[in-house]
Image 1 (tube, one colour):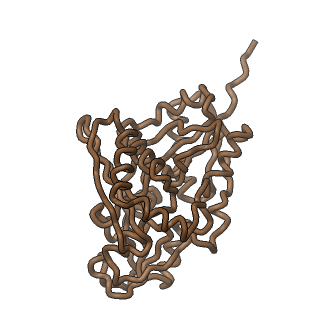
Image 2: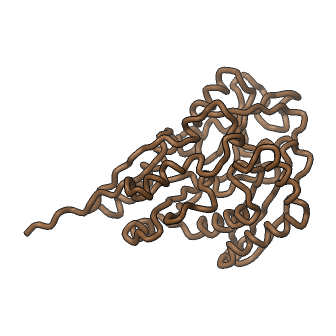
Image 3: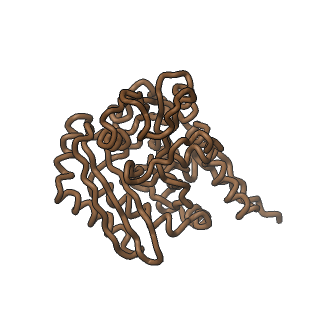
Length: 319
């Protein structure tokens, strides 16, 4: 008697070009490791993909780019979903878990300037230059360091944002270095913004693969994609964000590094107007990653982060 082949594994993804590039990378990696299995990509539109005429912070961020994919997993339509980790909330629905974190691409923010501009660095942009960003985190930090620049919300996927820049709607825009690199557009980066100016988003540059909590088969498959040092850094960052009760659209930034067994986590909270910015760091062992995130959150709260966040929640809502 011939046994039937194992069932296909269904991978969930958003429909944007960047999401599909990331998901197909995961698909290819798994297909190479498990040649006897078939891996299929199933795409879905999320709320964040559908609502493009409202600022992200005003929509609310609870599952903005993940909810539909999570429903697909809970209804057994897909087996796991590939996310940009920065889009994945720190508290996941019951029955789902973060099954794997992949090796991180450069997590920094990038300045991309209109072709007609001579100035290609934040320090040299003229007063009143219009900078496009949909991120309150980027907005708050850049307002703090460059109060003479103007800022304007920008929505749409990465290609749409670049088209808006090229058409002259903005003098420059801020994007993630990782996204540009993954789409083979690294040449569009005019400045990799240093962490002294802009701490990156929690999880930025890494892929988070979400799956059902009790799906042992899928969890076993995903082990081959796990990157241990990236995982430690991102668990510290997500713990920090969770403890501060911040969401993806709140001006909270991080930077994490590992040397040997030592992990350094830097975190920042800023007001939307850029008038207040609190930053501090903690150091500990890699094994203490999540505890370090909690420690840093308490450290910033002691310095007034709670009041800053309360004012932001009152202005834009918790989502």
